[in-house]
Image 1 (cartoon, rainbow, N blue to C red):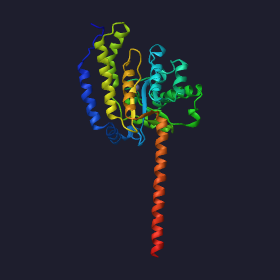
Image 2: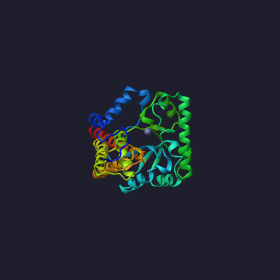
Image 3: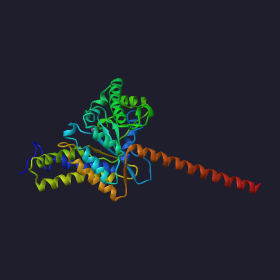
Image 4: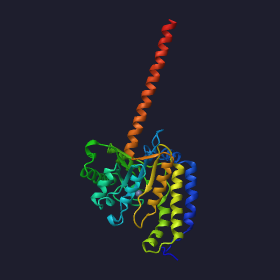
Length: 322
Ligand SMILES: [Zn+2]
């Protein structure tokens, strides 16, 4: 019998519940859920970005909890970067925690930024039910600490100076839990935007189920049956994401790490294969923002020229009738 960690099994009841819960969310529609949350909780979620309006075949890929809690030893950042490059040079926004990024080797950050990816603020660490309980000054202090780390990384690696250019500093609240204090503090910065998404499945729980299988493999105790189970779990994640994704979507997946959500690398590959088949391309959030601004400008131009065309017709008609 292959080794699995205590308390886990290949077909736990928790996993049986994931599928129907996420099927329901998918049926209702994540965009609709996002709109509903903004309407019910405007002080917390008003202004939160969940997708882009575009007809172009592009989506924004975002990867949470980067880059590695365990430092270089457990980091799978290079594997993720290689995978993204393999699929049409997909670009992503990595929502990093400042504690999980300062412990990385410089070469990894350099590669990440060089290859067209970007970093967003996911606070200092991914603490559960913590940031949404803070008062505004305390949250602001910690948010600025994380921002300063990201600004320094970008400056150090020769990227644009975020402090001077005031480019959008993307923010994702840990666990998506935003409070009114957090929203106010973020808005006071003038260049920050909160981003959730419309394409997500709780990959962490599926991956946690599959993680012991990786441990077994590392122990040299891999079993084809377990390998199949792992693939099945990660297929569930990617299939649920693929059932939600459409042009303009913001997809969310968690960063895989050795021994922790490691299976997410496989889920990400299945997802990238799926969107490639549909002719969709992955961009980072800044690229998507620029594209949707261009789309808007084009639309305004079209409407203006249509309006002036109508006015010309009206003028012609009035000249003829006079
Ligand atoms: Zn997180």
